[in-house]
Image 1 (cartoon, helix red, strand yellow):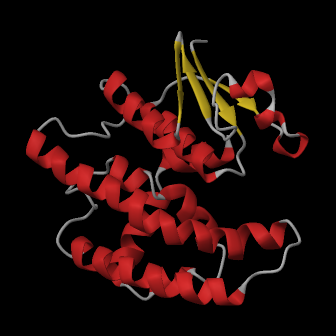
Image 2 (cartoon, helix red, strand yellow):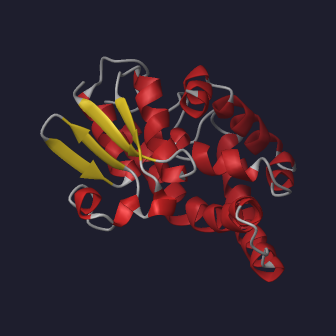
Length: 210
């Protein structure tokens, strides 16, 4: 099997790559990385990702790391497989590119911190920092207000079809929707409908259960 994904399903970044592979309908080998045993810091793994973080990815002789770089590669390298996650019209794709950046630079910045405080810390028996939760909820609300406006104009962030701009949100949404932060999405009808739509996609369900 040419494609290999190294990671752990507890990682939002790994799930982002798994979501893309599922949308593209590609066969691949998933290699679990035991982070509690520091496998991600081993010389073998560092040869795949020198930063010692998951995921790492191989497609034949190509080695990649950084989940969004992996999804971009898959979308461009396998355009005829599964869901088309990019748009070939350059102006329309430029809009998709804007929202890919928004997810990475704005949504993820605050969403991941909330996922850590509200989702991961309780799993690890750590104490949630209530001040950090309050601060990042306020910042995420400001981002979601922009999303609400955008999604009142189009079904998806990049336009009328599901693209990488939407897919990249899925892992953090998964963790936030199991916490009290879900109310921030529920309070915004267009955001709420969008989040429900993308989380119900069969490929996403497959990615988090397979």
